[in-house]
Length: 328
Ligand code: SF4
Ligand code: SF4
Image (cartoon, rainbow, N blue to C red; front, side, top):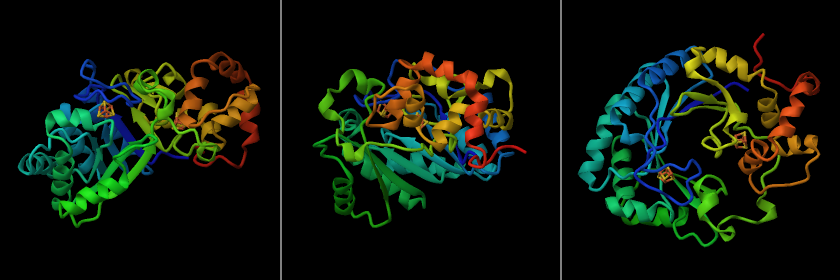
């Protein structure tokens, strides 16, 4: 596997404090990615033709407008597709939404992803409310951008794709909008705030098998760490098992990717998924969500995992012929 997208978590700072937030973002978080690291990684990503999309996310990336604009600008100049993930706090009126996005569009923004659901609504209300989402989507489609609205569900959730379709239809938005639904993960702030009934417990929906996300997206965190996925545990105690390097080491991105391709856990997760690792560890515990399984691999089962490292060559040998994208 060779990475197809690069996701910058510009910051964990956020003007919302959603109960389900798996990266535990909020107003108290301060750290933001250094501008020279952002620039350097985008320039180095140019040498990796498999990377086509550059994503700006967080936290709320629009709270650092200069950094965001500079990143979009450079990524666009280099020919990447650019995507912004946001909570749409900035779209209180149609005019504000248009003006805000017009500047980013001029900088080279191609795609707008708005996160909106029952968890976001109480915080969005402080900036306008549901109408912000309508304003943001209308402005983005008028500017010719690809638009996606993502909702995180829990059993009994009110705001979901069917509801969103309805409000866009009532608002007269004719252009195509993509929708994405996911279920809440018992990770990050959700782990502390949400009781068990918020999570899916349908065995039919239990995630099993390979995690194709591993290696597909490289995540760059606000502190400069580079991870081999952008899963729900990136800002948790389990983060270390996904970490390839830190930008502070000075290693260029192609070298970081080469190192990822020699990382046995990355291949394991990518080819077989976390459950296969549990089998190898002799642990029977099973999880509803793959990222949850990785969280426990990086915490409760970390020592057992480390003990497997001495058998790296043996594990690698099993996959001869299955690995794609290894450097010659
Ligand atoms: S889910 Fe998104 S909007 Fe909500 S606190 Fe986390 S980063 Fe902020
Ligand atoms: S399952 Fe593991 S490897 Fe896959 S996205 Fe989640 S944390 Fe990353």
